[in-house]
Image 1 (tube, one colour):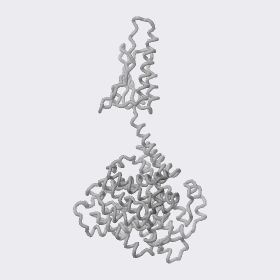
Image 2 (image 1 turned 90 degrees about the vertical axis):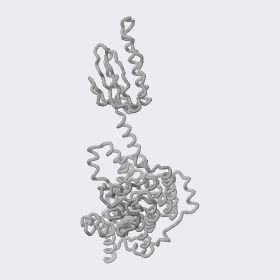
Image 3 (image 1 turned 180 degrees about the vertical axis):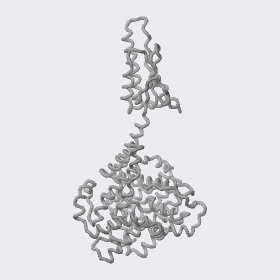
Image 4 (image 1 turned 180 degrees about the horizontal axis):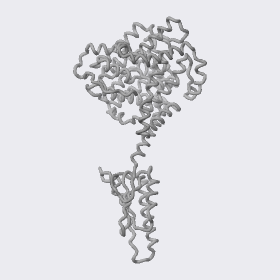
Length: 523
């Protein structure tokens, strides 16, 4: 979902609800794109390859048949690979079904409560940072698999182990993996061929053919069969839902899968001129799909922008294309499961290294830094936190930084000073007074000359928190006492004004930021 997608004048999916030849063609294209990705995500997640295909089938037959986004395609996604791998390693493969099932039910509940639209309120910088962090972790882990090696468990170990990676890697596997990445980069440039055969399928097929013809000594996918791979969660595994760590993982599955799916839906809506996505219904559809995936012990499901974009660009008109792509995955898994055993693991690692690179918004970083440095900082902090800690903690840290940045941005306070001659000074405080700007606000007030009367005007405040209100009251009181001491017992001295009271800002009060004053201090 990270690549920027330009608008397209694709036919409206709402003009006809009947399957067409275009839907059939689009479904075949999506199937060819989805097959290697389903297998690659499953292997990278530490589960049998067949489980990735099961999730793809459910994404087509279950989520694809439900209302929400007519042209969006769902299945296993690289964005959840890191989280799934950690969950499987921590709680075991048997607990995966329970985690995904609970996450699916939570998604259904959120959709029923009409919370889908609120996912659009998540900071774009946090989402991009999340994807960038996932991409970095994915690349760091798959570089080892590219050479038929086992990646260290901790992120720091992966980074420090890069030095000896080239010497320990299997040359044949490394060549296959590098060749796969090269094909993925170059094949789309041959546009006529790329419209017929997608790059992931071509890259994996070439790697499998080279492995078979040259009898290369590399690891291949272990095939168990579709029914053997499916494993419904047992009663004992449901008892783990009382564990704090398991609950946190379920929340992470549900929130991250929902955010990725709904942001993908927004991107898909820009690709066609048809009916827009109903976010709440789409969230329910994703939840229903994940509930079924959990019952089968499969991987979690999200909407995937790569498959969805391929579906739209192939001319899909109705949801029939995404349903049919699930049918083709089911037929392949039932009729040709042994074909998976021909695929070298290094080729799938190359596929995921390429996918991880596309998750990092390299092109957007420069303009973002020049125009919105705060957003760039949120992105960087989120990505680094995910690499240093884990996905869930990294996203929470990113959200906290985004909220703090927003609070800082909106808490601008302007102090304007107007000299009224013999009448003294009029000081106007305008904007949003929060504790974040309190030190500079007090500095501006304390810098006022002490030998002249001061009238404090707070009508321009749109918001004031308790800390600033108390500070302003205290400053006004101190100013009054100072003037009283200065006046002494002089009966002709100017009366001391009472401490200013902080007014409640008027609803919808207009901003006074454009007001011209004799002098102005911005905090």
